[in-house]
Image 1 (cartoon, rainbow, N blue to C red):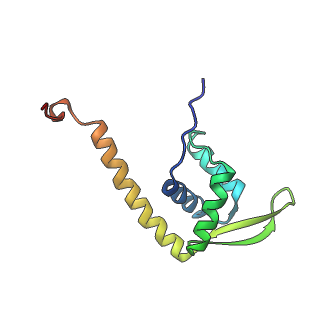
Image 2 (cartoon, rainbow, N blue to C red):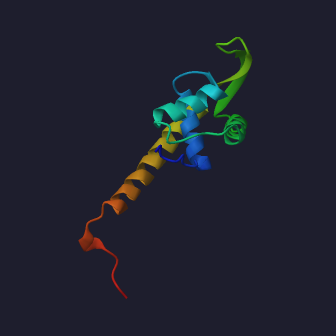
Image 3 (cartoon, rainbow, N blue to C red):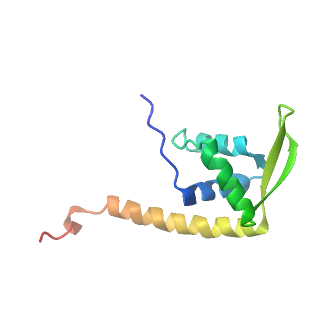
Length: 118
């Protein structure tokens, strides 16, 4: 039985999009497919979340877009990381790494550090 998909928090989605685009320009479908692939299909990004996030990142100046042709000759909007976006990726990555380490520290805390009983 496959594991259920996990909903992606808004800030997490922004980080994942920035990371995907750090490898080069891509259209929205390719970004979503990359996220699913690298997370072994654990994270699934729906269009209703992806495209508002792409527009939000574009408005912030972290990504830029231009129209082009996809591999199957369809008109598609291709997104690329800006210098500001690359800087933001570094900031967000550091923040998420710190957060993830804190969560793992709590999950792996030894029994002798359990909460005190009242």
